[in-house]
Length: 117
Image (cartoon, rainbow, N blue to C red; front, top):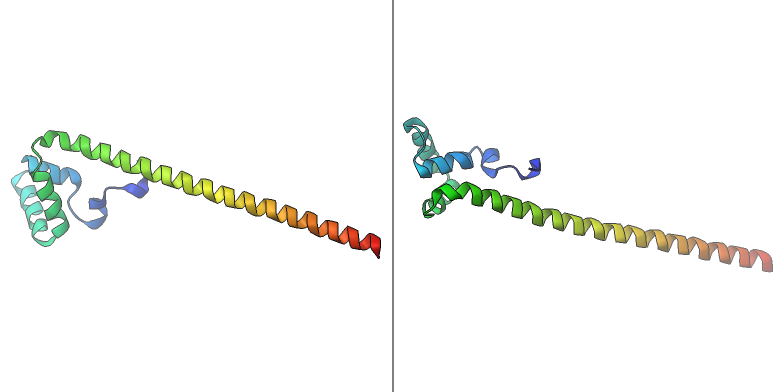
């Protein structure tokens, strides 16, 4: 996966997605659980994320859903990037064509006035 789209929890100092999932599924040791709970007291973002995760009944399916959502977001971002890049290419092509037309017109006028004078 592209490094620009890394797990947002990693860059904020928050528990990883896997740690939050393990917490919700009760897979953490007592010490790890305590660390997550201490973090949750100060981080509204993680508290809300955990609250949302806790409402899901089929918790074992969460990692698959997260993976699917990430790939869908990446697909949409790549599509947007390609369309923006395509537009930039069309603009560059239009500028080149207009420049060539301007040069041809300038050469015509220069030749036309050089013959008449």
